[in-house]
Length: 336
Image 1 (cartoon, rainbow, N blue to C red):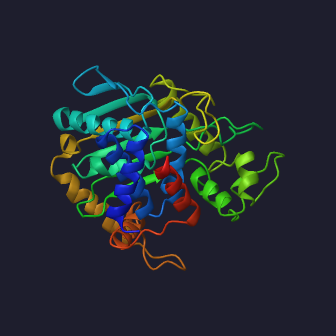
Image 2: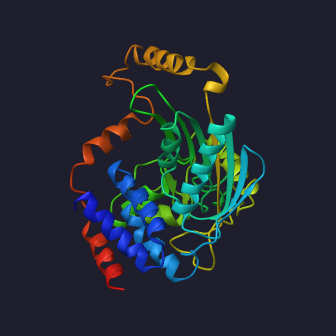
């Protein structure tokens, strides 16, 4: 399906479920971006879930979002259980304004929901020549190091910086060996997942996606990954006044109440520290690393964000391929 037509379809669906035109557009843009960069677990595969949560009144389609300005650099947003895309869009835009004015911005968001790809928001700051750091918590999926039960989410960590080129440096990674969206897509399509990324509910290694969803995802780097997940739970959960400690609700399976996901957005104007030299030095940094001898099997050294940028440019003028199951869901949602 052509991207403009798909966007119209998504906006139409979201408006049917009560979102304003502006909020529907914000949400549609985020979903389409995920498809274009190949992050299908954060794209159209989640459209029905968002609509289901609106129908069951655990996402507020008409939120009254409040921004508490704490200082010229700091704000605290109560998203009033809005769809996560809208809360995150406001969060990063507010953080950008703060950094443009004072050199640094910090925005905490509470009462939000799943917002898709963190890198999508970091890139908005990078386009304004700012550095961005973003943290968000998620439903239980990963067991703390030494525990037998899930508690931490996949808790993404994101960092973005200008590079002096059209391709930003965007590190967007979860603290688990595989993000949960990929497991859900694999389960949906009856596909296996890589070995070594998950355990079943009995604690045994599994490549069965459905068993992985019912079991435990493994953190990156053992206890170090577990520590990073804990850090994100504190920064985006405890600090923001959101759910934490395993209390964040699963958006697909738990409709007993809002998710109350928390986000933390940090933006920095690098010119405050080294002026115009920042771009000169970041170019030098990247150039030095790319010139290093290549390991066997590597023709080049890519920095985070290069591959997704390549996929985005490759796919932006192509039709977006939509699986039959998702097309059927979209037809059903349109018929409501």
